[in-house]
Image 1 (cartoon, one colour):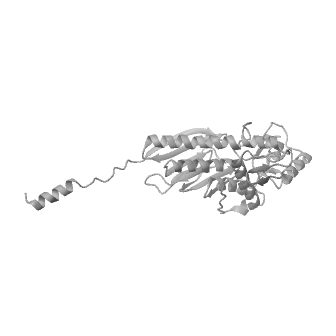
Image 2: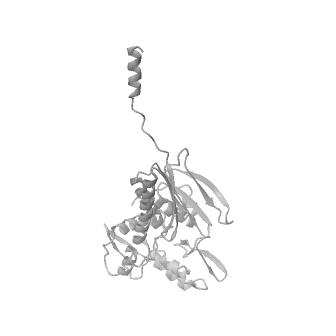
Image 3: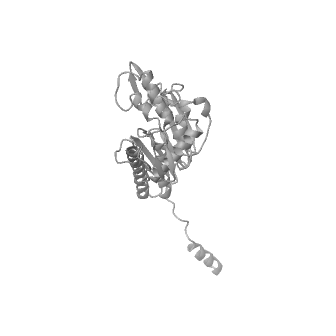
Length: 305
């Protein structure tokens, strides 16, 4: 063998191999948080690390629930309700940040989205069972209570001046929690994930070899029927509807999304689906779109917390 050929072979033998790249593994988990079913799918090159990321994201959902839930007597929101009419409450900066976003949303939607809607939820039987719709006097009082409700913020401090003010964060809390869980996934090195909390979704990246996460939107008029399909990549989708959470009063079904202006359940649409940059924005806008559909068709907005 000639020396030149030997050197060429020797050099080739010691060239570094390209780094091994493991195929991304699908990690899938189901859970329950924010009072709703949770489904998480993610891809990670290391399955064990993917499982850790999934557990951390689900734990984040439950942590936020412990701050914002009105059903948890130990939550920051429940403590704020107990402090209503008594002065400033300064023990929950995260709750204050969510309420700041809620106040911005109320202003930006002209009142179509309003977290002070709780008196109407009670009047229409969504908190305690009743057999008949509210009378005109009861309805007028509940509507007036919503219109008069005040939330004051001073940095991380919160004040509800009226003793009976109660807040319902159902239309913004889930979106906020999903965004926080998405940040946790990113911090764990996850680049492709789809997190769903009962129809509200956040898509990070896309599955390997795909242009996005394929999602289906159910038809509220026909159980088990798909109304539409779309693909999501680095965006959120939220659906608000009047067919899933309902009460039946005097033989008539009423949806849970209230129109603050009329004091009655919104009836212009049966369902509204919105895509936005964040889950919080999609959550808010899907509710506002259900209440006033003509005002928010095609709107994309971003609320940061």
